[in-house]
Length: 628
Image 1: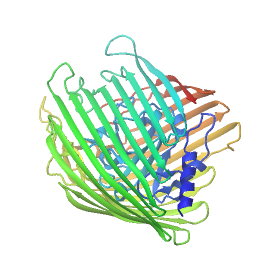
Image 2 (image 1 turned 180 degrees about the vertical axis):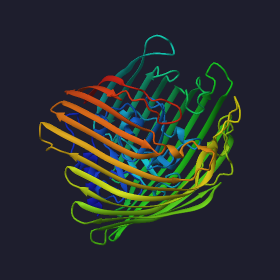
Image 3 (image 1 turned 120 degrees about the vertical axis):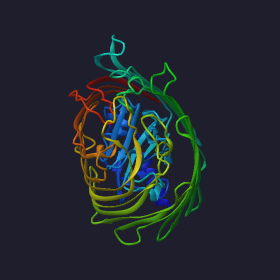
Image 4 (image 1 turned 30 degrees about the horizontal axis):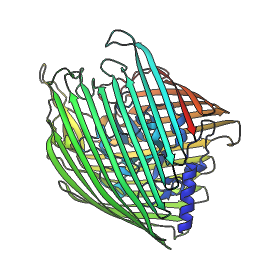
């Protein structure tokens, strides 16, 4: 069994390696990718959960500049950006709130305890990313708290060769800059990467810089990212891995939190992340993986602009985590057992100083002992120093009807604990509620999957029920001129959600053909039932998606590639918009040249708060990669 596992793992590594733009891989690679859950490793084709993947090829061909924009092409993922060019975004899955989605980097939880608004302040340039895995449905059995509706795991590249890369790009809307009354709105960036490998070590170092004067008044942005990945392999059964990342991200925050009074607002967020982990195959059937990680975040906000200290707030938060995962393989199945601890602290001018601790443990069992049936079941037990004990049981079932068709079913419970902002913030426009209780949910899902060499089809239905759902609300009526009515979070009761989803991924032509076609099509429908008291406004609940359609199509002829990415979103409030993007590229030996048009039809739309997103935007760029 061990030899088979090693072969499958090596195949997944080979198939997940990047290629040039003239070498699109077929879906065979995707079916055998090992989903990096840091628990029991299962190939994508054997998964019984609803999992979506953005591969390395997807990242190369889609006309997007940031992780936030890339995720907008994933079925079931709702990206509500406050700022363009990756400044800030709220990410949710299948109609949940943005705080109900766990964010991970190589399986390490990096969810921000201050506010999930900063979850996507990630210190990883696109150049360092191999793929992005989206696990839909209750994931607390796997990842613990705050994975109520799912998890997004960003997997960085595995170093397989020596190479250097450099990418430059720039773009503009060609609209006049209304802040300076001269020039045009623009954005530009550069990304550098270096990979070095020896017999026992590998090192990856990546740097990214982006700078924009915005797309409307007070929306300029600037960020710098640095990421290092190092691995030491003393022998075939042991591995030591270290990661470090840092991002300094600053941006004009016009309309982000308290429109229209925050027109001059500005924000700067700095995040540092580090992890140290090892993997050891102690015996042919027993492996163990301990890990330490730390995430530090600074958030400074100027309500009236950087020129004055009035309305200025600053927040420091730190999260230290330690965990250990083990796997025991037997002839009848595989057991997984793990423990983890998480220590969260915040020191803030508007939230105060608070600490809390979290301890968790899980037991999991996977078996294929019954012909054509995979069973993956277990439970996660969690204790939080403020919210007490909670147990998250769950089960995933997958039945192979034929070689290609699979029926799947999963059920599980999950939890989301309030952030420090939910509990303790004390600002003019937002007031916390220390009496909040945690959200608790139960979900069942069933579906069918089809896998072949060129086609992957998934379709399913889910029903979710959340007790003590948390929503920020305020009184709808205006009590007087100049009076600010603050938003306040409340456990408003039950939140029920039903959803239908279907996705189709097709590599149309033979990989050896000179002209090939690739398409992905998906549709998601959500039917929510949310309790909102009469006379109250909801800040987030009524803005979740109702209908979502995503259609991407690529034509690859020799060294030329043309990709169109299209998405239609309609929200519960009946706000809807259709966005179409386009990328054309040409591969000239080691040089790739590309041109993008985003929001081709210059659609005016808002995803979050009172922040109009960019209209039509033109970009050009080039990437040079040299292997040595």
